Length: 275
Image (cartoon, rainbow, N blue to C red; front, side, top):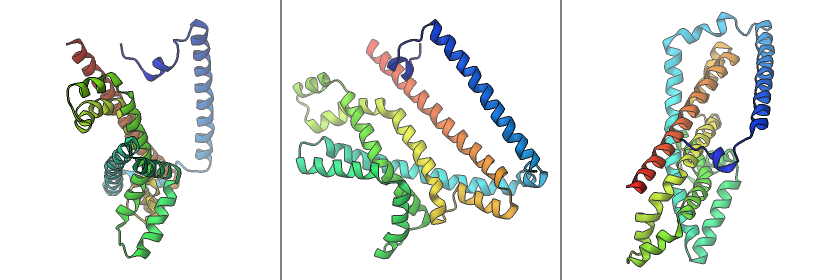
């Protein structure tokens, strides 16, 4: 039987609670359906469903243009996620060190990256960095700020995973003569990464959403290309609706990937323990 996070955090609801949940769920669905009906009717009254706002989606060139922007978005998000993981790993290692200076510097950097808004970092790379003589492409002006903004959260997630590994394994490994470095990379970290994979993928979703700020640096991502379509066809509703569906599908696939990986890792761990 698959155990969810909700099952671990909360008790199983009783008959009365389950009944109340069903009632509130039905009422919520009806309320949302009524709200959507009002919105759709208003769109119809204002002519937003006219063919001229949707016909251009039947052309291959439109989808090719959106696909090019989507590729830049995915490339930026994946590159930013890799950079965020590397920086987060280094910050996590620094925070776990016994060296007080290294520990303090790592803590300050983690809190800084977690506290500063992503948009402010983007403006820094867009307006301030070029004044120092460093020339960055639009791709890196959006990728680096997103990565820096996420690395503090990644560091804390990795640290939580390391702390979740039972300390008895550390003592057993040290008693066998392993150095602290080999202990970390051979015993602790491989287990810690299994604990935090869902959190890391959730952070990838956040990085993907942060790339929508690419319009600030005029990077030809999905949102920027969507704005071009809006300018050409004067079809704000249809374009933004299609782009929203694309983002929802990507995030849904990432969440399903997270669930599948977590389940497979949990199953593999259980099988090894049984063996």
